[in-house]
Image 1 (tube, rainbow, N blue to C red):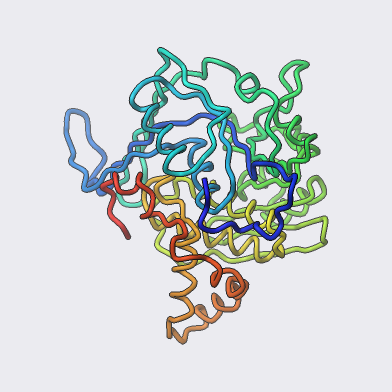
Image 2 (cartoon, rainbow, N blue to C red):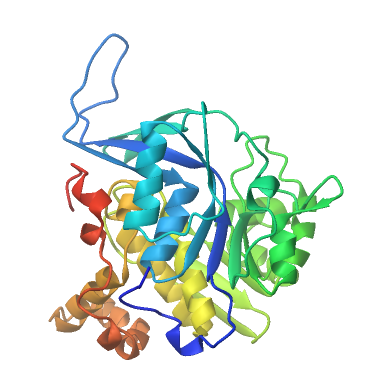
Length: 369
């Protein structure tokens, strides 16, 4: 797929890896209902004002990465049902995600999640079955890639078999690690031993404090910076903070003041944007600011991958900030913090990807905000 804007074009050279990011995981069909007056009670029917259908799960991260201009490859199992057809077609044809490591399986139906949004709260129902083959078998020997994003809850080895993530790292990929919520409450610190394989670790504040046994996000960041070259802690409405041990830089940026309607996939958007800035060689504070901006653009819309912004959305936002005559100190802080976009946005063409430009968005009946 030819992208209208390539954020790392200046760093590409002959012989480089064919992909910028490689992902592996479970793709769900997400059906999102919005504008519900209430959560349906037993024996009742409730009509929703809006509905959208889109690939979810690991597809949220794949879509976010591709819309921000990264050459993205995804390894996932797809069913042979209509849901699988829809997700495959959307990712490959509309979002430009490479699916050469993905496979279709007969008589295996696609996992499905139904999300119901009432106010700012969500309720979800999910159904699915494990992949017919292990992820290591699905990926095989991974293609060369600049980066991979993985959940550290997935071990680096299966018995004595080297996992695909380690093979990619040996071929030069930067490993960006994340974790999910530990429902057991154990928060085993042994998981942090896996950071020796990683270039970056991106937990949220609660996860970071739980794993490091610290009392504040800042102390958790310091503890993680001793273990991994790039430590990043996201802190919700408080923004994000990070330390790049390779450069000695430390940064903290506030969250943007936006109406947060749906946080689904916002963490994936943050991670994809951080990878963009890292591969492009930006300063740490600019990487962190860009990731915070992209996640803020995402939470103002409903629907996971439907909400992931593209470079067209980023350019539109920056031009609006620059032309706004708001005299407030907050507006002035945005102009200063995102001044680095002055060197980028002029090269973003009018045809650059926007949320509304994706066909999947046209098929959604989800109101814009």
